[in-house]
Length: 199
Figure 1: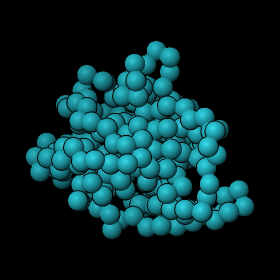
Figure 2: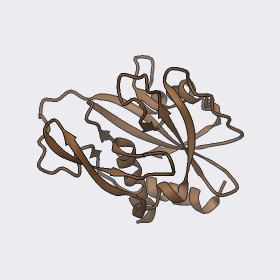
Figure 3: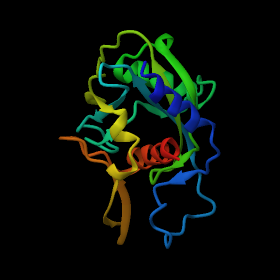
Figure 4: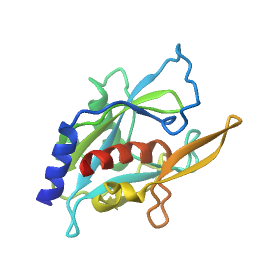
């Protein structure tokens, strides 16, 4: 492993933080006080490479009902059989990209992130040990790719853009990487990690 980058991750996870949401950049938007949020966990897993740590990301299937074709972490909602959000993230990563949980060293978690789709997402930061050859789950994942640590932990890579959503202008972070348009909740959670790494 790239020792300096691993140290930076551990330091980032030890810092205090506050929850984030898809509405962070839209202070005028009022969230319903009685909204019901479902717990979920995503795996922000880094693996070693000759050029440094690489983050595992997926391109969701274009056939999915929710967020088709978007860039995302492996992960999903907490099922009844999951002990917690970390267990859900590990299970989903195994199912979606073929990552054996025994290869994963969990370093810690980032503050929860609320999505527009009603989930309270816990990002689980981890390291992958040993060889990992991704196996995309048919029907859910079109592609698995790797984003350099130096890209996802550099705040300058993140640009604020906007689009119309429910009649309002909604701003969000983007962090384009070659042909991959990283945006929305994934970009927001990564921006939170980048801020911590660079602090």
